[in-house]
Image 1 (cartoon, rainbow, N blue to C red):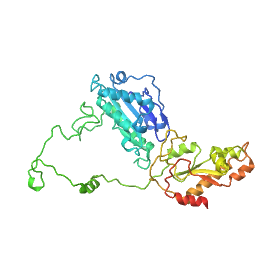
Image 2 (cartoon, helix red, strand yellow):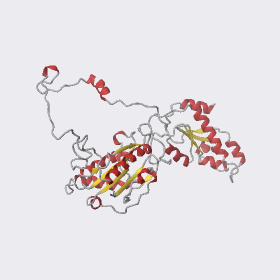
Image 3 (cartoon, rainbow, N blue to C red):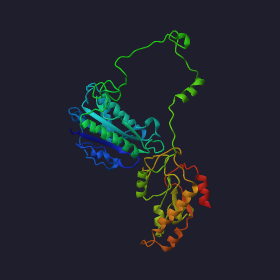
Image 4 (cartoon, rainbow, N blue to C red):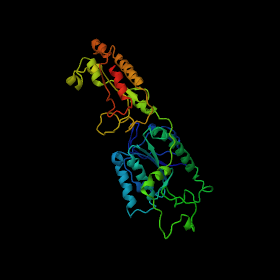
Length: 399
């Protein structure tokens, strides 16, 4: 039994890879899903009619979606979300309009944006459910925040999710629902009354039990217990689930490291980096320097551009940098000491300067001067710098 699969993807994850809004890729095999997410090849579908495509035949829809600033979808997916939202409240659509559709959603978001975390993925899930579609897997809310993600980032989360996806597709292809209806649940997942937003119960009838122990703490005359405001702190603290804290994770994951190195960064330790500025290369050739040379007399070929924190506190849409760096508003990663960061930056900077030996146009005198650092720019990624030992690092650079 083959499974017809459509894929819709829109947005960019932490990896910086752009996934365009596409659909129409059909396979009777699901072996492709054992590959990493960034190796997927999608076929662009020029026109899409959800009602015609998904309402008349049994299909499986996989959705990969990011949530952008202000809880908006990627530009290429705005129409798709708007269509679903309108259809979900349109009386002309039946509540079982997409009853033949099975779907799974992999949402890409960042937990730093608390109230908007994966808002688009959950909204699509809600609309599809209201139109009668059935979930193949529960909507996965992946977190690109490596410090908070239990899987270490999007790639780790996707690896776990894809394994579950393969099992679910195998069950679907062989006609097995995998819901264990004969063990723990009363109804099968194929039952029309079962969907991702239904309330789980242990039986079909509710039984209300009244207590006769009014004298032993029970309420009298329908009155409810009222908790004093002063007691709420302890109550909330004890009621919150305790989360086991493991050792801090490294800021730079293998995928982020690969992406940054491709852009010319030299990674130092687990969270620092150094890179040659274009003005450094310009002055090595005897040309002009940056504004620091114009206003302050700082020679660009003797300037080292580095950062002790590759994580930026912002994700400004107008930034000239690639959005492949981690994002964080507080320090939550494994920390390298200031001496390691300082020495690693200097060594890597000299190595990059040394690679210009013999390059046409490079002046030997400028190359010799470039091997003596006289200034350091710590704004390679952006401000503010959250590195906890920044004062020690500055002292070492001045030494």
